[in-house]
Length: 322
Image 1: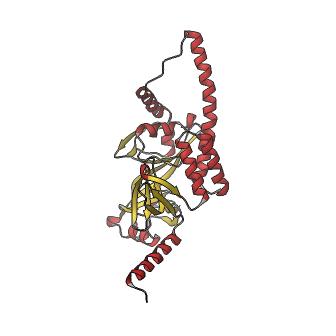
Image 2: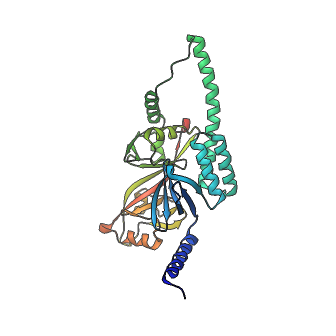
Image 3: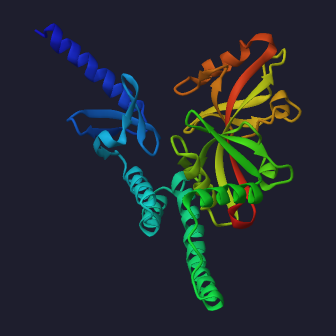
């Protein structure tokens, strides 16, 4: 005879089993106070982790984490690569990214990491050689090495360089970095970046909880001819009488994705493009939202309009990574 406690435990085990079976990855966090958390890491910031568990989303500070394990070797390699990159050990990071890419050639994170580090390591090597020559010439001319700039002066120089080379200025409020202005005709303008866009990631690295100084440095450290960034933008799209915005939606690994946009549709007029990801509909997050519900929300929008939060991937081209 099964008692109530045993029956309850059996139900919990079955629920957990079904939840894990439907998940793409299952991660385990061991905290310093002895707790064990199982779930999925959905956002990884510099100082904290957003962890999705069967009981909902929780925030875990990295200072409280003792050990972190992933179920797949690919995820372990990417995590090791990011840790090495944060410690400025770029050669080791490149090796880990390369192994992860060979294991899964479709991994966007691994591919972006490799492309970033290839350009960075090459440019860094050239910059070091140029710096040696420059310092030698200065010493020959003036008999001394020029004074090292203060951190504040360097930051101001970086802001000016960002305005000059990329054509953008940034602002940070409540841990969110936004595009404050875009210079017409600049590489940022050509890429389609607009004032008010929220900067989400640079070459796959989330910028949440980064300081403005760290964001600027991350933008400028890319030294190839391109800089790949992810942005979020709020936009209003008209819903026609046919209950359509003229776009085909699909639920993919990265989220609710725009698969196609009809020419001349209201979606096209609003600037939506294939591969854009819809992260919210009328303020409702699309994370874990079934496709049918997402479509229904769009159809039920009031006044024939729907407010969408769109995540876009863009590439800025130009000299010095801009």
